[in-house]
Image (cartoon, rainbow, N blue to C red; front, side, top):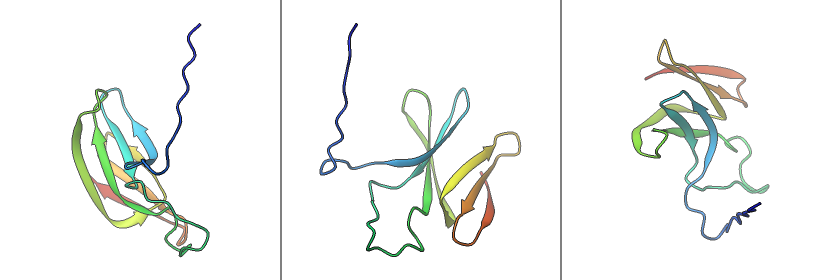
Length: 98
């Protein structure tokens, strides 16, 4: 049995994603650009992001979406082509057509 380990180097991390939603052919990633929030930072915006990257299963980028309101998590209605985002601070759900 072959066992592999992965070590995350925080000083070398450049890209990071907070949420993943996918179909058989498409992956949407809520993108945070490797930014982290410390306990001393403004908690109102902690974890709220406004960029979604769409890629295929081969890792090829397909689209980049900039949301007009930052959200903490996403889900997608693939048939209606709507991305739903949750704002934890305002307890609101936003709909973004794509």
